[in-house]
Image 1 (cartoon, rainbow over the protein chains, first blue to last red):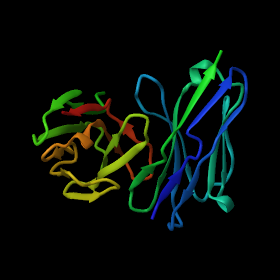
Image 2: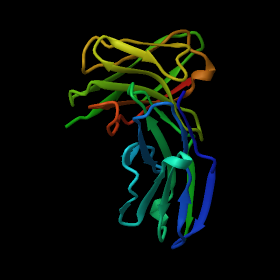
Image 3: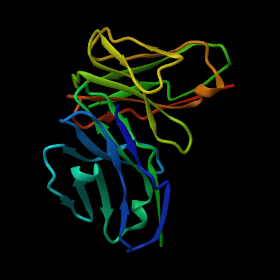
Image 4: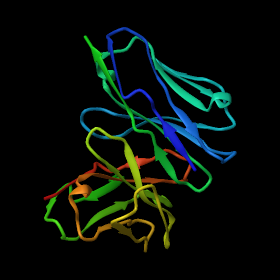
Length: 113
Length: 112
């Protein structure tokens, strides 16, 4: 069975601090895909990144970076020099061979000025 | 481009009533999904479809039904509404099960 665990329910930081959001997953599929989505207070869901199980190379996009480690079944997300606009709920998600895509319970990030 | 369109955006139901949440997409995506998001919680998969005529249960299918007669439409039926079904419902589509999801704006349902 597939499972995504985001153990951090809420994180509060002060602007310009770095913050890492943890994501641990479980799957029996050898091919799978991992995602991060952002849900700002307005409620829409914004796609951030997709990673397949064969590509463990870390990725950086501006202030965002992602660390994928198959050995620990983790796909962590780091925001460098956080800003108030980063305040949102962040979801990690997992898709396997069948196309069934499940989400973790989300981490609420509050960035204070 | 409309993308994924959900209707209605808001609805109040009485216990025991039934209704259908409509979802349509104009991107010719094969994969479509229904999620529910309870207040302060994550998204739970209700049903998904990998193509017209094919549907499968997700994590929380009880109390719901779906159909997929066309590529574009994926309606979600609530039978005998219960207060536990009060939630925000999101429909989403993807060109492949491993690709980015495109979400609708959500439908807020309250069952009283």
